Image (cartoon, rainbow, N blue to C red; front, top):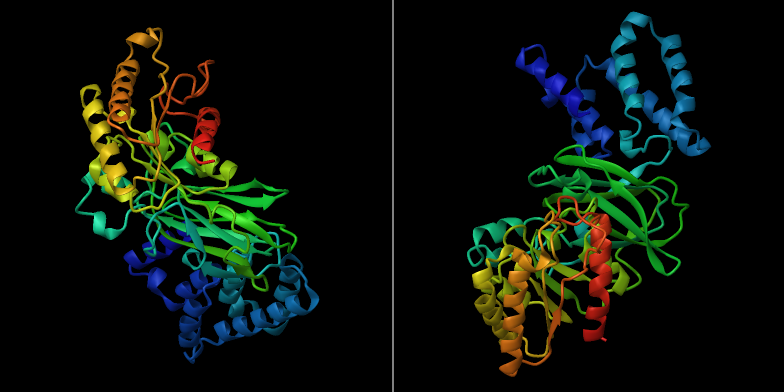
Amino acid sequence: MRNWKTEQDSLRNWKISAGSSAPKIQWVFAKCFGEEEIFQKPEKEITFIPSENRFRLFLKTMNIINLKKMNNKTGNTNLQKPFMEIINSTLHCKSISRIIYFVSLYFALSGNAVGQVSGTTHTLKYYDGQKFTIIGKFHSEKNYVRFPQEYKNTLRKDVWDLGQNSAGISIRFRTNASVIVVRWTVMEDNIMDHMAFTGIKGVDLYAYVDDHWKFVNTGRVKGKTNEFTMVKSGGEIFREYLLNLPLYDGIDSLSFGVDNNAEISVPKENYLITKKPVVYYGSSIAQGGCASRPGMAFTNILSRSMDRSFINMGFSGSGTFDLSVGEAMCEADAALYVIDCNPNTQTELIYDRAVELVKLMKKKRPAVPVLLVEGFYYENGFGKILDSDTEKKNIELRRAFKTLQESGIKQLYFKKGNGMIGYDHEGTVDGVHPNDLGMMRIAQSLKPAIQNIIK
């Protein structure tokens, strides 16, 4: 469709036609995407034009087909031939050439036309994602960003900008739809050379089946605006669903398309909703780099495993023990605050910043435990671990932990980084950022430490 729109606009540029702004072109696009309120206006405009006999005939014929499909539950592939035969038997070939063009386009786009999905007879109805339960953020603004607007002038610009990425934010809903389509538009259409598009700006879907979250599908990325059929044959069974949003891009808009007769609502079960969240502050690794899809970020893995939402405060290159981020974290009535900022912070700054940040958070939320996490050792070729920058940084964090303990800070905990991605050198994409295997291992390493704190 995007290519076809470009072709139409090129005709406009050459003053051959009105391009995609023409009423009939707008009608085709609206029909393609099942946007009933949008396609009705140009449809009325066109049908009132006296010379548009052929378009009116096309609409009448299409309505007959749709009615027959409803009555007989007959697929569109069986209707195309009789439809053409009806048209050809009533009009001369020359007079219907444009009708044939529109009809062919209609059926060629039947994967989306009037909300249909390719290979099915399902007519879809779309619902704004904001109608459902949003988890993984601490504020209630109607968006998919990690900070509310009031923090724009409080945070460093890099942190604010990265906060527009929807890492860790998910949508919980319930439906009995046999077909589920997701449409989403990203803010930036970001690209990185070491991370899959599906992780950067894709979505993935889970369903709660047999007492656990089961992966269903990943929404593939075509560009800034995307649409993907996540479920094709759900069987009209009510299920609880979880849609994870992009890790390294933001969401401008998102909607769910389901069978016209299906029910879709906020969750009936409270999975991932009722327990207090864990707020995890860290670097690009915590943000999700370089998981292949959103559900494989270690905070999302932990969330499903522990039935508890995780608020992702990972900021690529910018997780540096900022007090302004600590202020925001404390707005969440959390079960635990985790601070994992060694990777992005200069060695000589870690001690002072860690001490200051923990004291701030304990002043604001004295009852909430804090876990300090060391950095894991990078795959740095053949150098000695004890000579690495990671080890030097970890020494400074241990020193800060000791000082805080000696000052009387309660409910303060420490997690060593050694072995978090395993010892076989297969846990990263580039020696630093975990692949899916590394993400799984980090989650497995962190889980018992977190469980022991928030029993």
